[in-house]
Image 1 (cartoon, rainbow, N blue to C red):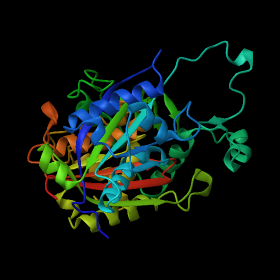
Image 2: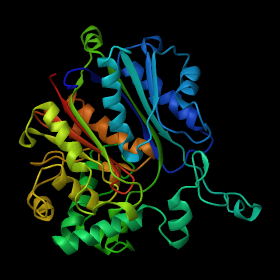
Image 3: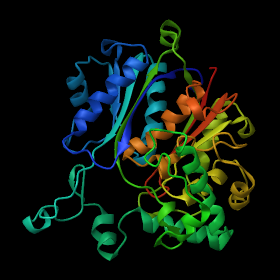
Image 4: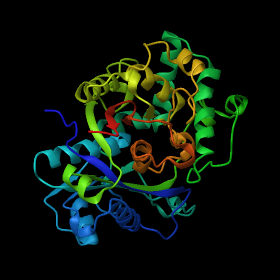
Length: 398
């Protein structure tokens, strides 16, 4: 079954990322961004009959119904998606599938991440003991057997991927730094980006602190607070609201592991099968893509994704980024909102930002950074340590 033309994104809302959310709860953020997306879609809250959310701090279970109750909705479809940075993209095709199956007509997909200042006295009071996730203490094998020996956080895993890539194919630090520089240039066209008005150079990137060899400080995302939401609707609602639409043409998904320890390969990733399925469903060639919106927790993530998604051959990523202009008005526009490297990474809303930007661009609402004559966009969401992958192809026409 193909999802081509089964549904389209019409409503978009995004909270400008901030470093902290003092006094603002996650539910506050969910509700405000949800209302904004519904209004942008030209709908009322009572028109929404589907909700997709993600696990939420402070709500240990029943997250969709918590949001439904909060907004006063009555839905016929509700779901929670937990695929890390791939969650935003995964929400979109699930919404389209539910619409195609006749379960609903208008689905609200919402993400939000709160970030509080740490209380320096908390540790002395005994708070925060052990490794904890949204649902409490983590009892997985990773927490028990890997965390005590230093496999903590994403930096280590992506540094290993970068080291392996350099061993197998070679890429210069300057080529990786160029990705960060061009995305910062894009952010300087986006007033909502955290690093708006703060351009950087290749030398700036290479002179920044080495965090996890070979990754420098300016090659790594900055965690922030924020929220983003989309409304995915039935084709009839696209016509009746007369709103600009970003049509879902194809989608693909693949998950292979959780921790880097159990990755089948550091170079042959789940990105490839996900992208292949998305392009096959859409029935379009890579050469027709006018915007690549690629998850970019690190510069190496972008480089590997360009190869695995089929925009260049394996091992040619360094040369590809050196030979192409990745800025919004260049010959290969990539992450025109600045990417998470320069827009910032507000939790799962960071991954969603790649979907919102692609949809915004396809709808011809990119403002000062609008890609000229754009017809097709490719989105890749990445969760974990290159673990969970979701790919979308969006288009102006169904």
